[in-house]
Amino acid sequence: MSTFFEKNWFKLALGAILIAMIVSFAYKLWVNGSEPDQRLTAMKQSPAFSLQDLDGNTVNSADTDGKVRLVYFFYSFCPDVCMPTTFLLTQVQDELKKKELFGTKAEMISITVDPNRDTPAVLKEFGSKFESKPDPSGWMFLRGEEAKTHKLAEDFGIMVIKEKDGNFSHSNAILLVDKKGKLRNYYDASNPELDADHIVKDVVTLSKEK
Image: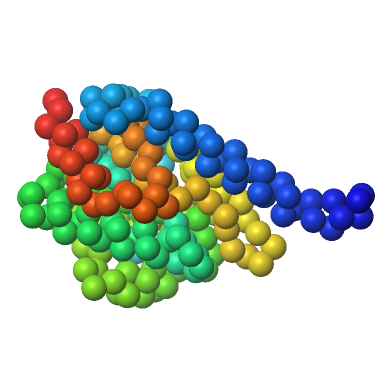
């Protein structure tokens, strides 16, 4: 039995963390309720950051103050959840454009947790795979040092674990940040019932706040 645990301790620890993460998200969704005024109650101030966009320009979190923000931690080599979640975000982008909020009152931010492999060229290629391509006028793909990015994710409440094969296990959540930088919701992006309309409705609600 001890030999089994010695050989499989990493997988067992990772499994325990993932279960705890799922329970944590379920609890947050339950506590926040189903009504917009309950779900969107301010949680905490979102952490500040300074990262680089795909053109090498420095982007500070304060640069997007005054806009509702959707933040997603991902990586392009992700074998499962990142591609479909980014596709969902392209649908959000399209709906925000229809409502004339995209880039003016709402901003989307995708932050890679794998900056060593996710070079600007790789991320541009990743974005080109979608029929509705990410529009840089309101959707930024950002990079930074790996350790600092993982700390930033942790400060946002997102778990990131680097695996032996170079890939990452991470919380698959979209974060909703209001115009004043307050975290207002965690969307479980792996929930099949989550759709673009649900997210856009919340963005519209927050965009009307003073």
